[in-house]
Length: 218
Image 1 (cartoon, rainbow, N blue to C red):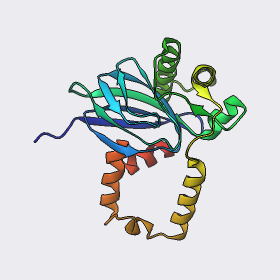
Image 2 (cartoon, one colour; image 1 turned 30 degrees about the horizontal axis):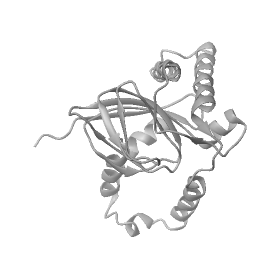
Image 3 (spheres, rainbow, N blue to C red; image 1 turned 180 degrees about the vertical axis):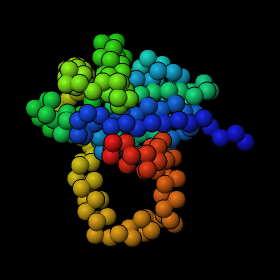
Image 4 (cartoon, helix red, strand yellow; image 1 turned 30 degrees about the vertical axis):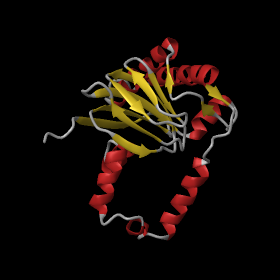
């Protein structure tokens, strides 16, 4: 049996707390969550996914959004691979833009041509920066302006001040503290060895722990 098509690239952004992911995949992703906000565009294909607001469908051209700690999955609709690009950012990035911390993105699938255009522009600039085609102070300023436009539109039209249902920040902090105290925690969590953990990490997020480390270290 032929394995499902899957390609995924994670890339660091010019600022701390921001990274982008480009994925083309036929895979079914199991339920998982991120400790970041995410906003992206589905460029090809269609998918159905669970979200904090129930099951939703997305078509090419729709925007995909997720909150920290929001459990979701993803599976293709209609056959074939779907392709999407996402920007993920830490809680502090959105809090700095909004001037408050209790922010929730209100919908997992968004139709907003203005935000889509701004997001595509930002993604293009980030890819150029990552590829080394944009390295001047003016290029960096243009990236920052694009990020500000995306966050501004996102906050103005698709966010609320409602508290998140899961305090993911506290949860992650406790998890990191425990991992530091108990170095054999992976075994107690059911992972037989490093390769077992790597397979689970890749199955849920689409890229390997090594790819994540390399992208963040660049």
